[in-house]
Every structure is written in C-alpha cells, then in structure tokens.
Image 1: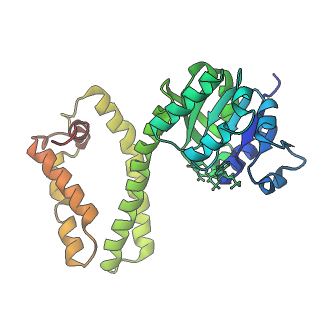
Image 2: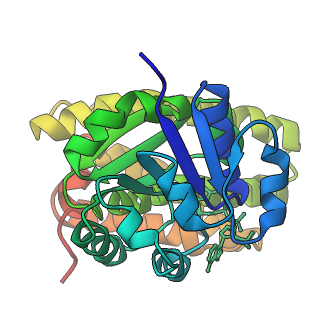
Image 3: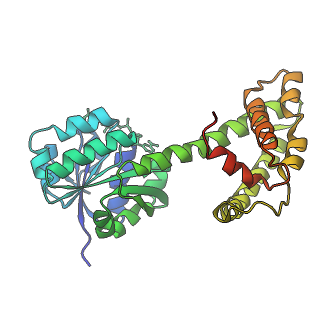
Length: 291
Ligand SMILES: NC(=O)c1ccc[n+]([C@@H]2O[C@H](COP(=O)([O-])OP(=O)(O)OC[C@H]3O[C@@H](n4cnc5c(N)ncnc54)[C@H](OP(=O)(O)O)[C@@H]3O)[C@@H](O)[C@H]2O)c1
C-alpha cells in the first residue's frame, strides 16, 4: 500500500523529530515552520511549503506541533488554514489542558476537518527512532484510518473520544515520572548524607526500579479485581519498615518533605483500617478526594 503523505507544521525539537520519524518510515513529508530557518535541515528530504496553508494542501493528514495553545490558535488563524482543513485530519501534538484541546477540536470540526490530540510520552530522540509511545484521543475513525502511520513513531494507543482525554493521562503519567525522579533524588540525598558511595546507591536504586516494574502488572490485577486480602507485604508491615525514613532525613540534615508526605499517606491508610491489606489497597483511598 502507498504510504500516506503527511504535512508537519512546527519543526522545534519535537516537531522536527516527528518529521524525521515519518521520513525514516518512508512517508512523503511536507514541512512548514514559522521561522523558515528550521526547514533547512529537511531540504532534499521533504517538500518545504512557503506557508501553512500550502503545507496543509499537500497532505490528507496534518501534524501540528508548536510550543503552546496560543501558538496553535495563531497557526489555525493564519490565512487559508481553517478552510484548508476541510476533509483532512489534524493531529495536534502541542501539550494542552483538556479544555484547550476540546476548543481546538470544535474549531477544526466546524471547518469540516477531523481532529485528534496526541500526547507524546517520551523524548524527541525516541520518536525519531520509532521507539516512542503516544496516546491519542478524539475522532476514533481518524485514529483507525491513520494508525499505521502513527506507528512510525512507536506504540500508538487510542484512549477516548473526548479529545482532552490524552492530556489527562499525560498528567497521570507525569505523576509517575516526576514522582519517580524526585524519589530517586530524595533517596540519593539521604544516602549521600550517610556517606554511602554513589555507585552503591545507584545499584540499589536501579534494582528498586526493576522491582517497581514487576509490581505494576501485579497491582493492576489486584486493582481490577478489587481484592487486596492476600497480602505479600501488608500496609502495616510496609508502614513499620518505612516509619524511620522521615526522622532519619531530619537527623542527617536532609529535606523531609517527600518522606513526610509518604508517612502521612501510610498514616491515613492505617487509620482507614487497611493495615492487613496489600499496598495496592491504597488505590481505594487515593481514588477519593480527601475531605
Ligand atoms: N521536547 C520534548 O521532549 C517534548 C515531549 C513531549 C511533548 N512535547 C510537546 O511538543 C510541543 C513542542 O515542543 P518542542 O520541544 O518541539 O518546542 P521547541 O523546540 O521550543 O519548538 C517550538 C516550536 O513551536 C513553534 N512556535 C512557537 N510559537 C509559535 C507560534 N505562535 N506560531 C507558530 N509557531 C510557533 C516554533 O517556531 P519558531 O521556530 O518560529 O520559533 C517551534 O517550531 C510542546 O507542546 C511540548 O509540550 C515536547
């Protein structure tokens, strides 16, 4: 089957990587960028459009990856852009709130286009090499029509018809990512204060992240079944093991905000009577807003 032609609007770090990934997968690509200098590396490998409307006219599917929502509004407002999207699919990779992505969807659909949002859960280099993961929401028909094209960048997952859904998942993933980063750095500060060699801490920390990888499918299964009764390490046992952490940070002169916050979560779980359950039972506590 012939590969689809794709137009990429916005050639910053991520937009450039999206275009590179498409070229590597054999798609015919047309590029446009507000500042023409960013199109230069694509000379001879992609068609270079003189303006945004010309880029849109070149392809059935249009990728938009500019810095922010205001930039998306500016591009959609350029001459000929909205009329040009009639009968085409626009995929927006610019980060947004769910409300902003719904507003863009309304604008594009009113012009007769199909609209998808994509949230890129990785770095540009991974997208360029086709090993990324992107979650999409919006027009499910458009996702299915272009799924094989999206796979040029790696795994493509559709998460819902409401265009904003992928950006809710994206924030959830940030809790995992930045929670993991801060946890790694916090524990490094404590190990350092105790005079533990950095390479020893690194080995131990790497092993803990491997443990977490193993825990994810196991906990996901318990959460799906809502059955936390058969505890390998109960909340009570885990809380007892964890209890000295915040105090040790204070004793060694290390920041205690994160360890004290985790202590507060253990305290709540115990107060709610979850002590004999597996740690995954804390999902039931966290899914309700604290009153
Ligand atoms: N980089 C990452 O690791 C990463 C990861 C996941 C998601 N993302 C998302 O990808 C989007 C782009 O990020 P990036 O890293 O590619 O940013 P970047 O390297 O700073 O590039 C920004 C791009 O947006 C364009 N732009 C900004 N304002 C514009 C406007 N008003 N009209 C037209 N074009 C405009 C810039 O054009 P000029 O060249 O003319 O300035 C440039 O092409 C962001 O929403 C970001 O959240 C990035």
